[in-house]
Length: 95
Image 1 (spheres, helix red, strand yellow):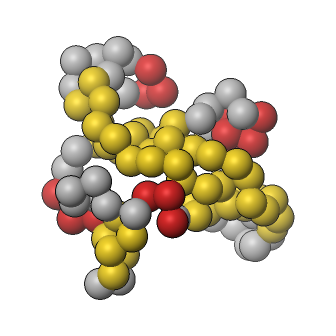
Image 2 (tube, helix red, strand yellow):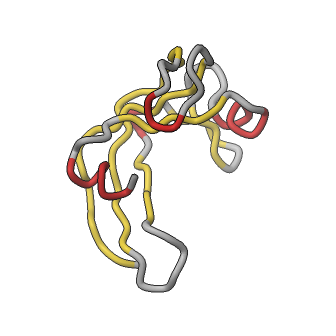
């Protein structure tokens, strides 16, 4: 998925509606470490694996919406998901 985001093929990041994400994505805002952010004020860091020296990509978040799945991007058809709409790349590097 990392390479698909990097090439621009994947422009959305899907998260299942579960308590973990509900706590963080409540009311269309993103809750992190006790603070509330509008999605457009958030930069998302993706990493390729867990090893030291892994590739990272920082991407702006344009919005947070709820969508019905049609089975794309490893989702279950007919189920609703939180979807982070990805914007421009901010930084590409290594950890």
